[in-house]
Length: 179
Image 1 (spheres, rainbow, N blue to C red):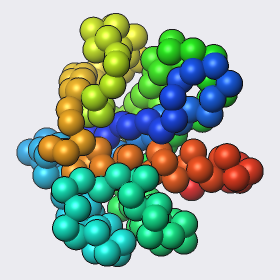
Image 2: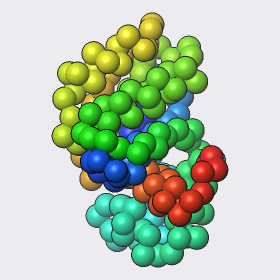
Image 3: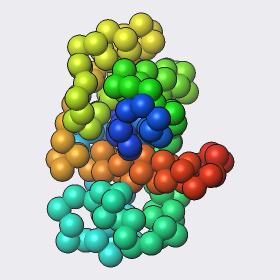
Image 4: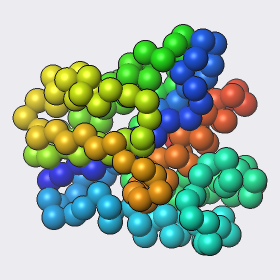
C-alpha cells in the first residue's frame, strides 16, 4: 500500500500567532497517483460551495460562502480521507518545520504497513532537504517521497487548504474539539 498525504498550513508562523498544519491522507494501492487522488472530492466540494468555476478552491474564498457550508464540506472530506493536524501558538518561522514533523510522525504511526509514503506539501518557504532529513528517521521501512507542489496543480492540496483554514478558524473561535 501507499500513503498519500496532502499537507497545507493556515496562518503565519510568527510570534504570538495561531499556526495550523493540516494533512489530508489516505492509504491507496501503489498505482494511484497523488495528482488523481483528490480530484473527485475537490469537484464535489466546489459544487457544494457553488464554486465550480473557481480556478483554485481556497479557504479564504470558500469562507465567504458561509461557515456552516465550509463545515459540511470539511466533514465530507473527513469521511473520504483521514485528517490530522497540529495547532501551535507560534513563536517563529522554525515552528513551520516543527509542526510539519509532528503531523508527519503521526501519519506514519497511523499508516503502519505502507511501503511508500508520499507527502505532497503546498509550496512554502521551507528547506525541503531539511524536511526530508527530519522525516527520514520517522518513516522506518517506508520509501519516503516529499514533493513541494502548487495547490493549483494538485487537487488534494486544495482539500488540505480547506481543512487547515477551517481548523484554524474553529480554534480561534474557541473550539478545541477534534474533527
